[in-house]
Length: 607
Ligand SMILES: Nc1ncnc2c1ncn2[C@@H]1O[C@H](COP(=O)(O)OP(=O)(O)O)[C@@H](O)[C@H]1O
Ligand SMILES: [Mg+2]
Image 1 (cartoon, rainbow, N blue to C red):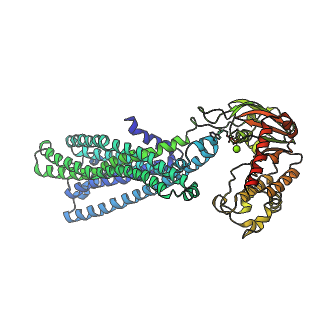
Image 2 (image 1 turned 90 degrees about the vertical axis):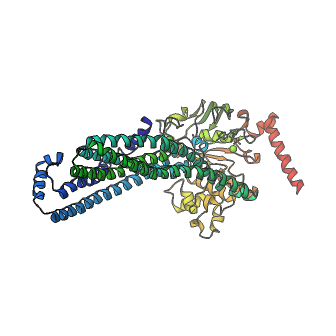
Image 3 (image 1 turned 90 degrees about the horizontal axis):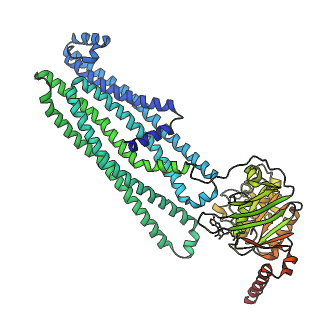
């Protein structure tokens, strides 16, 4: 029972900000159905002109005097009154139901939008490891399909509630006519509902859960293949990826279709079962009702009319519940994504960062990305003195980028501390630190926007002059001038219109524009030719006078002049000092330098 009611409560919780709209909605659809029911119940006495059996309604003074007045009229006049009554009833009913439909659409679309905004916010608030872990396709699927399903779920829940209310109202009218027949009807209807629940709704739910999983896979495959489009072409894997996609998609379609078929089969099934109920009621009425032929016939006809009317909301109620079973998995995955308890968040500190005075200190820092993985950093201790250039070298996978991720506070270390002028980085407000650090990383990201917009992303209030100055420092001005619309040229999705080196220079310009106190370059010049790299380096050196610079470079020649070089091996600091000191040590650094010198000579020989 509880599991069937859950979606009802969840939807009411979603709508708790709009209690009036919700109340209006339920009221509108209920009144619409109520008018119809009672209007029809009144129709027969008007036609028959009897005042003897107006029952409950007849006890109301206005109604009884109305009946008395009608009783005095001729039959044809009564028919005309009945007709006007009928038209009025249907008009009012339609107006109320139209109002209900509009309100329902408003709630549905607004809730969908609100959920999408909450998901967007959540995805930005949660620690980035969660987003990398959770496949991006899954998040898209939740954002698009599942919020949409949740919206539809609202209408279905409202349908469920109002049709149940209508069923109750009809039952009230039926009791007025014959409580014995009502009992039989309710009993049979309950049987049908339970049967539908167990045979159909539960089956639909199982299929819908499976379809949800497969839908997420379809979406993930799509996103993955979009990002890997180039790779797929280069390796001629089109047929393979298409087959993989259509396999998963076929499986999705088959599950979704099956749940849809069960759902749609339920409608004729209700109709059949209801036909059976009416037949049984007719038979039962011959036993239950009094033996006066004309009264009996009038009552039975009225009763059957009401049952026909009742069948509508009863079927809607059952259909709504089956549909809720089909949509519930969507609601659940929206809720899962929005749940905060089971996700990692960075906790904001109290201190406001303003100026770096002494420097950054790593104190026995260890870090791993996942619980069961090997540590990416092991007991790291070193300093990044203020106003100096600190470099990190090491083979790929040594943990260099991880250091950057920790300094930029994308993650927090599991043990040890990172101190800013002696205070733990975690005690600072994240914003205040982020606005003073600029990271240029290996994988540059450019938005599908103009060059200026891409640069101003880091500092929206930057003037055109500042933008051009930063572009010049980053050796980007020249090639930007050659673009069709110069600074107003729209860079394609992910900057495909630019070469790797050009993208890197835009990213460097973007970082320089912020005028950061700490500039981090994580292999930021790896795609550049030696000439451009040198030019940028001298520009950065000029720019970073008095500023703190943290550089990770693959080419060791570019970090020779660093004040301090930290050498990483397998997540551990193995040596540190300036270039000449490290060369004198005859250790790992020297081996790295020599192997690079050799490889340079080798490649020259190859030419
Ligand atoms: N997002 C991540 N999730 C899990 N492991 C990661 C992640 N990023 C890096 N690693 C692992 O951490 C280690 C250090 O990686 P990284 O800091 O990127 O090295 P480097 O920048 O020196 O090449 C590697 O073993 C890598 O596999
Ligand atoms: Mg790296």
